[in-house]
Image: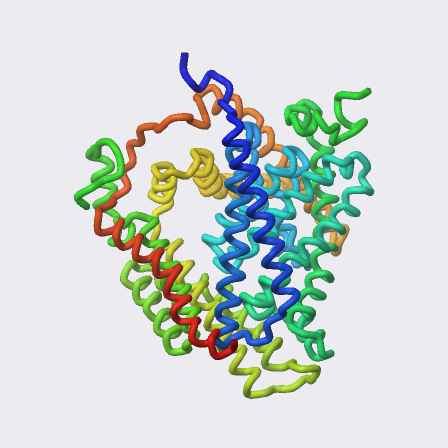
Length: 270
Length: 263
């Protein structure tokens, strides 16, 4: 019999290795973030500044890659086919928003959609992979891979605990996720790029800086102004898209059935 | 053609395809990426404006040699110019609780802008000179999980297909004489009428694709034969190893003296 017709051989060793990779990735991310927030290096362009920029870039990217390595081999085929579509939707819907001049990003729509339908591990993997592929067109997004993974992870967690069962819960979950993602991504913007890459967001940071805030504090405040609103809308639209799916399709995802993600909207009722 | 290739046999079609490639596309994609990583990390660690300018100019020369200079300038400008503008506002205009132009602020903004420009220009040069088919084949032939190659390939090739589908959906809505309102309501109307059909049709397709892929033994548990060749050689392998060493060691060597001063 072909080995592909057999169930995957899941040994305790490989599961342990994946858990260790996930723990290492999370620890690296949290440690880097904590060290940067506590020390807040003021030198941006001197020897120390160059070192901090490189170390932050490397630590955030490495933690994202470790998290990807931890989850990638666990994903079922139905999720693997969903991820490329989600990545393409991230890019296309991001451009769509740009073309209609609405001041939102919506570039994480696909990631949130995967989190809602396939769970937090799939969401995190979509976030990292999306950033890696998007970096082929915009290399500056590369160190934000960990933040993108967090969006997918939080979307999956929110769906697991019932945030998609009621339409008003989705934007609340998005708001909370936006605060966490904004806070985690701020050190990258501050210490790797010395601020933000957009003129509009740069103007907001300038206002906070002129009021006497440190660079990290100003960038964090700017992120806390933009990200929660954006994520609230993304979570709401992703939830509405999931409601619009035919029952047959949404219930084909094991995560949706197992955690009754859609509640009474889904086919399986208690 | 290099002395050593990564897999099986080379048929006439593949040989012709490789002959039609430019010099950079004949390199192993990982060689290009490793050298680019070494250049970016070393230039960032050095923090010298003339080195950053030289690297950017060198990247433009390389792009010009493969006929991609206009594209590189256009794509880079779209990222670098807003970044420069943002740096000028943040560091050039505002600092230490005051608002006004300072020379130190302008210098910081210029140095940060140049640092970002190196990452952007070299990164975009890589994506312009690396052939996407070669990249996917190289990932497949590497020790990376089989899922990674599929995901990169599927995303890169789905993107133009979905963009085309979005165009067709827009045309269909125009034929239905849908009139979009202005403001936020109009925007939500656009999301509903354009994004919903795109998302639903794409998800329907993935639901159909999954069982077919599973039936064909995806993800493979053993090494599979690939007809596409990825040119490689001992020399390129050596360059990759040296580049990885440079990524790890050169920044440390360049930065340790300034850290000592700081301590």
